[in-house]
Structures are given as structure tokens and as C-alpha cells.
Image 1 (cartoon, rainbow, N blue to C red):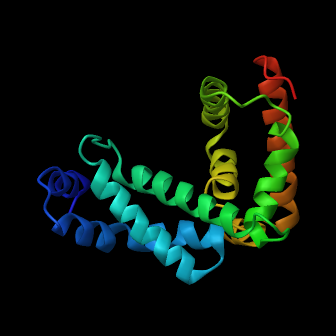
Image 2 (cartoon, helix red, strand yellow):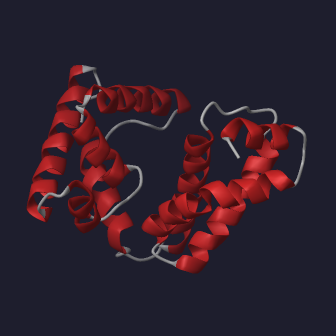
Length: 185
């Protein structure tokens, strides 16, 4: 079933929408949640919560790309669950590493207001879109999907060191890009 048909099921409030979503995007959503949480039970709960949030948000929202819509929901839920479960301790595998890598650059940014967060997000999106396709994919695999360095190296047929160097260079480019646009670090 294509995305338009699935979205129409949501708009019609047909419960089959959830089953069709799970059939088409269940593995995708589980992969995102599990990369962040590294816990299959928690990931499964996040995916179920994703379906509930999707059900409650369509309508009024009508996503243009269902996979991206689901990915954003499951990712946010997984990161929220991660933060709650790791609030009092360090560690946490790939997610902790991903957050630490980016935290170096943006932790001092005044992002207290919603406006500032949105502006920073727009600048980062612009940066990501400006990257060549391979670099963009590597960046997104690491910082959106929280893939491990070893997974990225396998997917892109690169050495782990090459992936690490590429990501380091991309973070430096992002830092410069942010500075050039008035976001001081």
C-alpha cells in the first residue's frame, strides 16, 4: 500500500492505518528507536507510541512524506526516553557518543527560546542540504539515526577511521557555518 493510501486511512479514522503503517514502516521505526535506545523492549514501546501519536496527529496534519513524519516522531520519543532513563548516570553507548559529539559545538548556544531553537534548526538544515550527497548521508546516519561508526563504515564501504575523520571534518564545517551565520559558539 502506498503512503497516500495509508494517510487516507488515517484521515478516514480507519484503524487499518496503524496495521498498514506497521507493515510498511515497522522495521524502519524499530531500527531508529533501537539505534538510540539500544534496548529492544524500550524501542518497541517507542514504536507503539509512534503509532499512537501518528493516529492522534493525522488529521489535522497531513504529512508529505510518511516515512520522514514517522522517523521524526519515533526519534523524538526515543531521545526523550533515553534522557529519562539516563538522567542520573553517564554512559549509554552510541546515543551518548552522538550527543557528546554535537554537544561540544552547540552546548553554549543560547537556545532557551523556541525562536532561537527554530533558527538554529533552520541553519543546521541548510548546512546539511549544502553537503555533497555522501557526506550528507554519513552526517544523517550518525546524527539523525544514531548509527554507530562501525555501521556507517560498513554501509559506505569505508574504514572506521575514515568515517571518524569525515564526521570530525563535518562537525568543524558545521561550527564554521554556524559562526558565519551569527550563531557564536
